Length: 206
Image 1: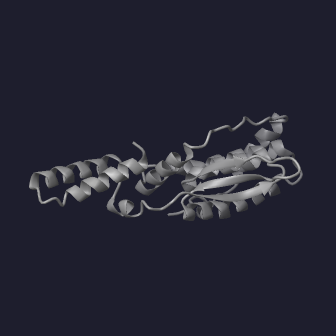
Image 2: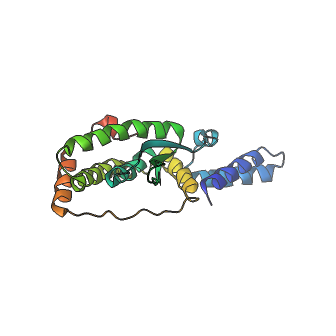
């Protein structure tokens, strides 16, 4: 079942738990409690299920450097979001990096993403894209790993479930990076690993 189907079923069971039929009410209450325990859903989450997934463009240009995409993809799970890209059309349409998630999460992601893009550019002021890709891969991975470290938090799990359901309508087509200078890429990774990530940039929301 999808996230929305789970929530819908629990709501129906909770409604039945108020039935004048005592046996029906007790059975419905037990099934609802079992589902909430199984899928780690609490009553507060049931109230907030009407939130919609939004798409927010966070970067656009006639050329999308691959390091910018990898940085976004790596960071997104920590903000309960996923990434879409719209490729540029030479001469008349800019390409876009788009974050999908709940509005508060996408806005938090945007702020941190702009900050981290600036840091990658500063790291690679005199370096090529392979170095920047290494930095971006490292930073994105480190930030994104905070989702894995906290994936048992109920709000985080249920939010990511709904985002994943939303993303199923898109066809994944991420390409592998073309790395010309492996040494520069590895050096970039090392520099990215040195960068101190303060608490303000570890999580999109508490």
